Length: 79
Image (tube, rainbow, N blue to C red):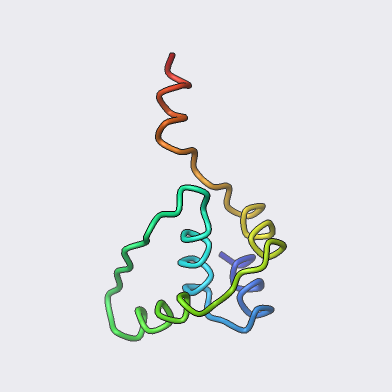
C-alpha cells in the first residue's frame, strides 16, 4: 500500500481513485462496485470517472499488484 500511496501522491489523487481506475483499465473492462464504511471513504471514487490513466502509470501499478487472470484463462489452465 505504501507504493500505491506514493504513486497516488505523484498523480495528485487519492489512492482509492487509482484503485478504481486501475480496475476499470483491466483488459476485461470490468465495472467496479465500490463500497466503504463511510461517505469520506467513498468520496474519492467518483474522481475515477474523470481521471485519465496513462499507460506508464498503469504499468507501475501493475508492477506492484499484478492483475488477476481472466476467468476464461482459469479454465484453460485446468485442462
